[in-house]
Amino acid sequence: MQRVSRLKRELQMLSTEPPPGITCWQPEDQVDELRAQIVGGDGTPYEGGLFTLEIKVPERYPFEPPNIRFLTPIYHPNIDNAGRICHDGLKLPPKGAWRPSLNISTILTSIQLLMAEPNPDDPLMADISSEFKYNKQLFVENARKWTEKHATQKNTGSFKSQDHSSPDLKTSRKRDSVDTLEENEKKPEDAKRACL
Image (cartoon, rainbow, N blue to C red):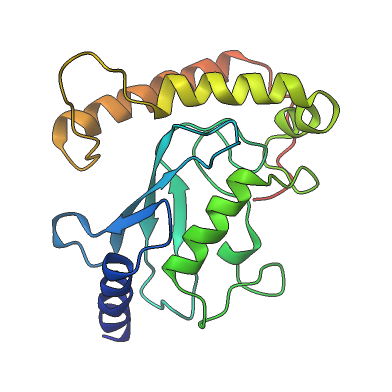
């Protein structure tokens, strides 16, 4: 019951005073699942992109952190191909920094900051981290290409909704995920997963 009342307050706060570039909502009155969108920051390779995230709220929230992952593919050293995020705020102590005083808004804001300022010393994607450290221009090019391919709306003269809760987009998203997984299975696994 504490989870429901806390989430209600947090969603109210997010709708009346959202952090800049962040929206969050509850799809189809699901108690334990939220969706969020983060606008790529100005001056970053993600500029112009709209990134959708899935937020699963555990039964023991706020005493356990939410499980957040990107649904929109993103080229980032701290976010893997499944959308999992390496971030201290999403883990319990002693390895993490989650506290019950944190909330969905603060975590989404810190993820937005992580997008602008990757942490290559604690990567999920070792190859992208290495690229970020030693060939930043190539990293920026690749991140921009991914953003353009996966996170921007093409102006085709017709409007398509970004609502990832609709059945057609869920199917399409699953298809994209399967395609991405199949591509990854074909590649040799040379990236060590330091943060899981």
